[in-house]
Length: 444
Ligand code: GUN
Ligand code: ZN
Image (cartoon, rainbow, N blue to C red; front, side, top):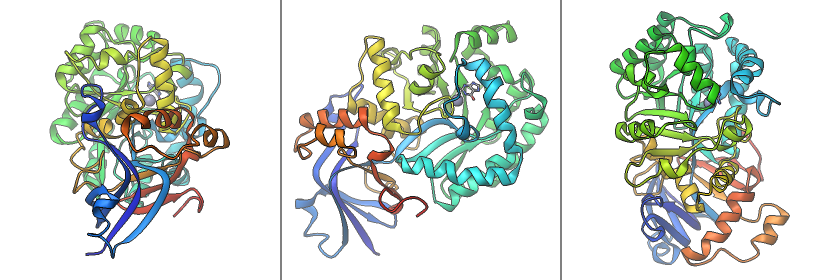
């Protein structure tokens, strides 16, 4: 078997720094060697320790870079790529004014095929190797996306949006057609190579009770698919859900009534949750996608990270861009905005905690931590090389070489997370193969 190796400072997580000390949860190897065999982790340790054992192995070195597991973006929208940063509205008006007219374009297969490689390129150039993606209501949009992901050997999760009310006719399906189309997509794509399917009702207001029941039926028929939707993002939205479902005990209860709240459910935003809803998510072991750039951009509110990570009732949590409600594909920028959200709430988020959410935290939220999220032996080797001196001001800020100990790493790591963006991504590897290189450009 041919082996290959990468030499760099290496950082990953072996446990959750929200609940364990940094010493117990962070693995930092200042001069490390990551050894791969057939795209999976074969060995990991210090260069000193492993150099002799792998003396003949082709080794690529990235001095003064930080090698991390590929980022996991827990929630974003493929057909909103082109309306990122649309001015002046909050959620419901923004959907009507910008999102729905744009998503209409994805009825056209050729258009889907044109945008899919742009979308995937953008993920890779930001170091994101796995994402949970909403496509459009049209099955063609899922086809184009999965085809492109398969071509690049990505571990991706996606689904066709289901919406059979409160949307323009040109974007609406029916309960029956959403069942047929989703089922056909699951049968064709779920577990094809590294691809997985998420049953994706857009959010409670755009599904009839009949369609939510169909989503439940799909989950029963295909129990290892995911449930992916929005929850409790904006005050007007929450009030609207109460009007549409007057018998419910709140927004989450609508999903609960249809059996959609489980351990493979991912709920984006969760900004306006009540305490009992937080407790219910903890009990059900559902995951929250924290979308800070979107929540500030759309004026939705400040996510309560402290409550979500309360030791007495912890909730599975990851970080998400929510493009095009979010303003950047960069998980570094997303972590930066997450930090600012916690500051505004007088809470805190360490750089280790933020990068945990963007890697192993996301993998755990997806029950994929046996495959991705860190460099435990046997895991799929999706990883990113970060450059702490990627701009002149970052070079000034990080003049010192990367330190030898974990405590001293916190400062350069924090500056990288606050100031870094796509320019800080030197290279992205998928299953040990180079998929993006900053110097060589895109499309490798
Ligand atoms: N709620 C329902 N649809 C959407 C969407 O496209 N973006 C966001 N941020 N929230 C939603
Ligand atoms: Zn969203």
